[in-house]
Length: 186
Image (cartoon, rainbow, N blue to C red; front, side, top):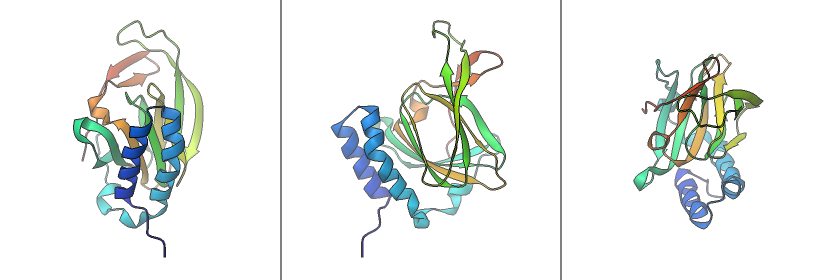
């Protein structure tokens, strides 16, 4: 019988891979299949992972964070018919679908970033991410997430740095604005 691949194994592999390379594409190539392996076995999920903050419209449980706030792993729940505006992370992100389908829209930034608080973005692509699907975002990538279903969805988020300890922005396409923000953590 083969031993299951758990969160501790994933953390150990995350540490090893990021110690061996800082190339984001290589991190995604090597870590992605391991994230898929981890989320394939749902026996480690806890009821609190399904709870979302009513004001924020999603919930975050920190599963792991290194000293200095690097290498953070979150379980994120999305309430039915809720989502989050376009945003970046201030670090690379690897997201693995756990339960349900989430609409993930990526954006291109059009302005030259020279004006503080100003940003022009446009939709680049959209995909439906389900269980085991990966969404990989290099540092500077912008996306939005929405749960269009009638049930809570879950996704595993792995970051190069805890996102509340990076410079990150939320974007308003109509106002052509960008402002910094932080998450509420459970």
